[in-house]
Length: 413
Image (cartoon, rainbow, N blue to C red):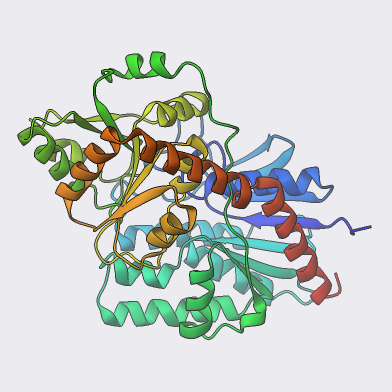
């Protein structure tokens, strides 16, 4: 029988946040708790992707129980304009609070990155303990690649971020990476021993996509039956490069196309994008929806869109893809050839890739899909099959259980 462990998960994002890393951290904590482990989460206050403190949260510290998991929340700095320096400020403010917070004497600590600087401070605390727990790090984004690919800093800052990330990874007992490309980069560029990196994919954290109420949802959102709705759901940040979608909407308007673009969600670029889209009739914005409505909106769209800045290749796997594949709707990915996202689209067979920063290609591909129902059906079927075969939550949580148990064994916990 597998030994039941005391596990502490440290991550700035957690439920009720519904995008980014939070749904995966929340699902994993709940899955490990259901498996019989004693799980304690130390998280930040909810703020993402709005970059505003969520209503109902106040004070310096808060204790909650969410779906059977004990959660300690620590107040931290939340930037209104999340530039690179402002994010570092936020991570450090959360990290310093981690140093002085009770972790409930864990056998294993799992640290979620990003945020990398919070991870560094948490690892410093662990290293200073005489009988330290085993420690693993869960890499959702490659921090150093993000600095380079989003042009957040020059080459010197990129090299500094790589050195820091390498040192942090190598100071752990093991690393869980969400993609093979992440592992390859860690081993070849960050000097991480290959045998200490385990690849465990993210999963679909949503229930099966709804099959009824779709027409009603289109009507609620103002989507006409004859429109080809191309929906981008999730964070509106810098790496998404969503100015490209506004240009696609301008092209659709000039062509009197039936294609209509919808940006659903929030993020630090939303106000900028809304200002840029003034006067463009073929695009609209929708605020974040509750989970059931969110799934209906995905299912009600004709096409789901992933859009990335040119040059974004290895820094992240878009978390929205697991939700997209679950919806059983064809995907268009506007991304560089050879990117992680392009690999996922090809591997799943659930969509079509077009070049990043080619707005006309998005419009033309959406129009083509609208005229070829057999192609749409094939792509949708491939997406659903990929979701069921590769994106099972139960399988992923079991792999994490094995990973965490192996970390504990490595230190005799």
